Length: 236
Image (tube, rainbow, N blue to C red; front, side, top):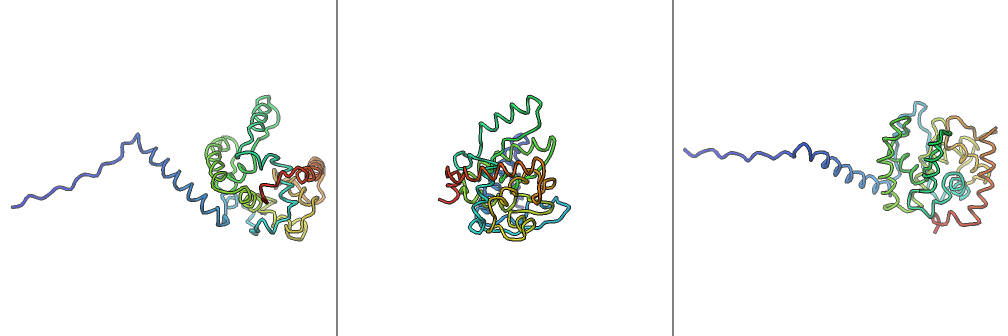
C-alpha cells in the first residue's frame, strides 16, 4: 500500500520576531491610510466618535475658506508652518524648558502635528497623551512627506474642534457668525483661532478676559503673516 505523504508543518514565526511583523503591518497600513486621506476627506475621527455632544461638521475645500482663516491659525499656532518639516524644534525645546520649571503646561506642537493627531489619533490626557506622542511623530512625518502643505492646512481646518460638538471652520463660522467660512473677516477668523486650544471652554462670541486679548493679538498678527508671506506655501 502506498504510504501517505505528510504535509509539511507550517513554520510559525518565533515569538521574539512577532513584534516586528506587527510593526511592519502598522507601517504599511498607516502609509495606505495617509495616502487615502491625501485625496479623500476624513469621514470621521476618533475625537468625533468620542464626543458625547454629537458631531456637526461640513467639509469645505480650502479654496472656499477665506484666506484670513489660514493666516489666523498660522499667526496663532505655527508661524513657521511654511518653513519647517513638521516639527518646530525651537518651540519644542522652549516647551520642555517651561514645563521642567513647573510652569503651566504648554505644548510646542505645529499645525502638522495637530493635523496628524486630529485626523489619525486621539486627544488623550495624562499618560495616554505621552503614549500618543510616538505615533504622532510618525504620522506627522508621513503627512509632511506624502501631502502638500496645502492639504495639511485643508485637513486641519476641517477636522479641528471649533466648539461643543462642532468640527471644522465652516461649521464654526456658521455656529458663531451665521455665515460660511468663505466670508470670514480678520476679526472673526482671529476669534475662531483663539478658541482652538480649548474649544469647549472659550467663547468666540463676545469673548472676555484672556480669549478676547488673545483674539486681538491674533488679529494683529494676521497682518504680519500677510506682509511676510508666511502662508505662501499654502497657495503657491
